[in-house]
Length: 123
Image 1 (cartoon, rainbow, N blue to C red):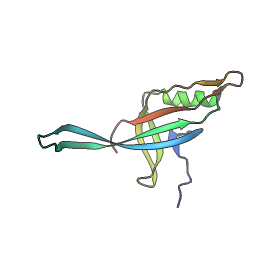
Image 2: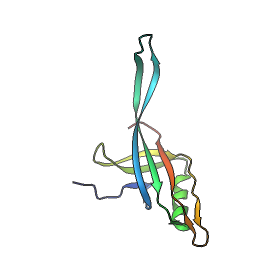
Image 3: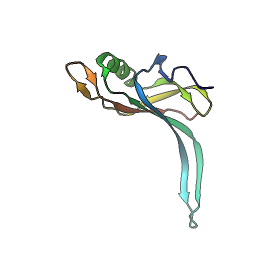
Image 4: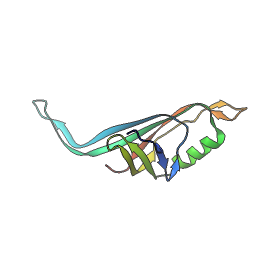
């Protein structure tokens, strides 16, 4: 059965205006190197799911303002749909750099932009 709830929440606030939602299951390794035979030797620290969000064109000034207020927090709780567990997961994240760009000054609309949400801890 397909998931029908909110795709993403930051600190309990549903995030609207998404045009793309992508999860990268990034592996973090410790003491990684190769021996003379070319074999990798490393210790897996864990999987750190990075979430990449793309916001649609024509977000309003109010929508952008709300999104920026959440993304500018040093750390925040993200509740997101995880295809791995087929349900929502909540974890602590921070936002990477992002660049909202003005689309139409007279109507107060903004162009599409992308931001990465980076997990603080492994899941």
